[in-house]
Image (cartoon, rainbow, N blue to C red; front, side, top):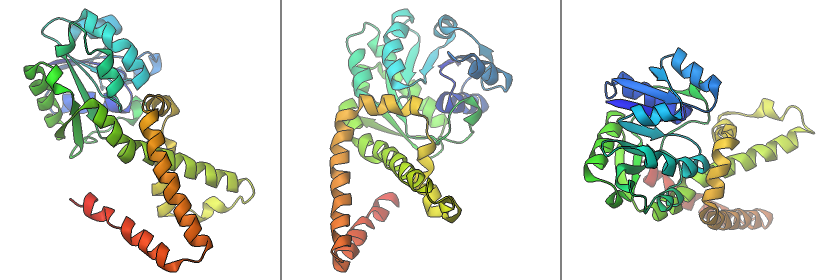
Amino acid sequence: MKLSVIGLGLLGGSMALDLKKRKFADRVYGFDKDSVHLAYAEKVGLIDEAVDMEGAIKNGEIIIVAVPVNAAIKILPQILDKISDNQIVIDVASTKASICERVKYHTNRKRYVACHPMAGTENSGPWSAISGMFDGKALIMCDTEDSDEKAVQTIRSMFETLNMNPMFFNSVNHDVHVAYVSHISHISSFALALTVLEKEKNEKNIFNLASGGFASTVRLAKSSAEMWVPIFDDNQRNIATVLDTYIEKLQDFKKMLESDDIVGMTDYINNANRVKKVLNK
């Protein structure tokens, strides 16, 4: 199988790495608008050949679009304009409704499969690509009824090579769910980092006290604005709804704290502990 990867960051680079390593792909073409990313990916063997956008579209039996969501919305129709009936195009963006709506009536819509591999780290760039990053993680495939059945099966097989567990969602519902389980986590981490950095201006030793709990909670604050601002912008309505609930829960805790409500705070934490049953399934 010949693959083309457009966007050689963490996701695109890691997919290229393992799809080659696990023999799904016998040749990987790569394109990135950043010439440094492109040269690095070719030098270290993430891709077999660096090409331009036209070369990526022409050569790939499967074309993986691994760019920020705002860029994906723009270039996906242009890619679909140029493919043959034997090619498949996927994207791996973290929001799906806008992208799916953008190409809903495209003549080559059936050659497109909307995907969201729920995997990643706080790092970015091709130098962050790691083998095994997708193992055991969830793959969400959206609006598959609008895609060719054989194309869906081919892409499902590709992600199963990466040891991912497929799930199927409506694209609109997908964006609601990821606002709760992914997007709010990043916003919380950014806010915590800014809170501590503000305090650190006056207390230079505060980071000397930081331990595992702080490090794990704030880890996502190291994530790239180039990637996450387009996600937040594209999913703003759902995220705003989640933030309303989140802020309400913070205000509830503040009121209990200020009123010395020990029973209330205990119940608050015990109720939150129920998440363990969900995460241990």
